[in-house]
Image (cartoon, rainbow, N blue to C red):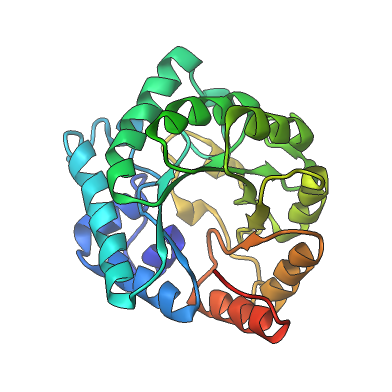
Length: 288
């Protein structure tokens, strides 16, 4: 969603990322959701990943926290309504910044912040999804905030691009599975990591009774520039081998290893999803 919006808008990226585009280009988020649904997606993930108080501080929309979440929900629901089917997943991104487990605050700070978002999203979505979770503490805090809503909670962990058996914090994916199982998650996923890192991460999830799966990104690598303060996505580069065919090859390998929830993260567009849907149907799978 975020990178697709950046590409379509053509504007210079800002630290507000996809939130900025939702403000500057009303209706574009609905258009992107609609195109993903038309390609075969069955879940629309709300454009709320980057809507946190820490991201909005010292910006012109500092006081629009609740209104921005409502806009993200309205756009996803409008596309779902027009499509006639599908589910809406309320997205909750990391506090501080992506890929920075060192910035995740203590639980007594994090849980109330996540709870505020969860309570805004829950009435208008079918499930909640914590995305790009980089540490065990982050996963525990998302669950503590979201499970009281009563909605299914999916945890999507991001792993080390060179060693998919580890989270970006260095902690083991196997330990993340224990967090998900013990904390009441309804599914566990691997997201926003290179496609090559996904398979060893999924191997650590084998044997769980929870549904599991993955959705990778198409970045060459997470640059040092993106790990600084107030990063913008123009410091990241699209890899040259990220075609729909090649990405679908990865996805089908994940399914062969047990994944039942698949899709795409940054730089995955409707064409990638359409190819995955085509392959799934050709292989006799049912998409729900």
